[in-house]
Image 1 (tube, helix red, strand yellow):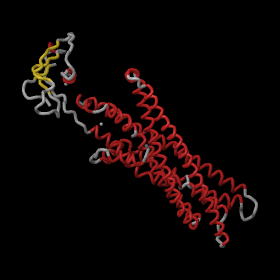
Image 2 (image 1 turned 60 degrees about the horizontal axis):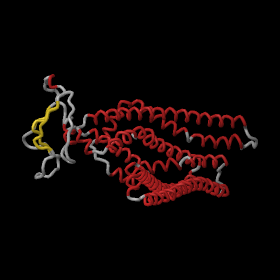
Image 3 (image 1 turned 90 degrees about the vertical axis):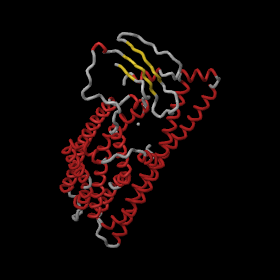
Image 4 (image 1 turned 180 degrees about the vertical axis):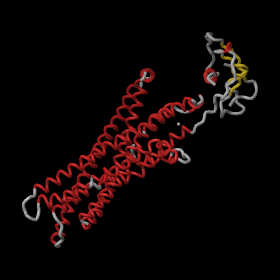
Length: 424
């Protein structure tokens, strides 16, 4: 191995606001959606089957409320007065059967999405690892190791969740909302209007509480990171040595204690905001049926032929609207986050090494195998001032196989630069 010179010098919270900010910083990749589709194209048939399973499973989940209406009207409280156990048994068994089928379809759908997502993720992970192996040394000196690891582990690792969480959730929530609306309209269009007037206020208020909780969670995570940083700085060998040498033990203890108090306060706020969120969900989920009962009473007094079975079935169908609607409100951000994730992945795939092995390498004298030789090498780092001294100037040396050579010199004299140039 030899290197020659002599001429001119050689020269990578879930707080919604924070998530949006992170997404905005994602690189812009041409034909991003097409490239994403290409990743999943080998699993086209499996994905089609998954879509069918999601649609059928979500659609089945809103049939039981319609059966409840029949169970009450024809089974428990028929016109004859006495419960009809034969009809009631048919409705009950039908509901159980539908729940079992929907659950089985859900398990099957989860298996398919998990399998496809993890296969794509595994393929991407190996491809990126191999691609990074081909990059020149300069890429690794300019890019933080943590950034490379994050791209390989976190971004590529998040691919599996895009299919199983984002896409499946979007499709399933859409079908559930649509099917629930149809079921509610079939049961009572008047009660449907009442429920739809109340539902948006409930969803938006819960979303607001969720955003506040997310911000508190983000601050809590930042505080934990700060405590970890203090621990690493203060309890490492160099940190302890510095604190003892300058008598800073009390200062470090005070610093850690202050951040610990902040962490405790944030943890309490996080727990209380979670409890508030849960309480609000329970209040709203209970209040809408209560209002429905009141409106149903008014309708009955007004000679509307509404039955007990219709009221119970309607409140059951209405209760299935809340969480799917909340998911749909979040879907825009989820899709943006998924696109940003793939954009960061493709950004690394689009990197091209500046140094490539020739297709037909020149033959090498086997006697020179293992020889390291610098012949009048001058080198300056890219971006250095034009009139500044080069890091290496007219450097020449030769190391034979089996020799041990030590590079001795002051800091900044170019020892590390030599070790970086050898792999080139």
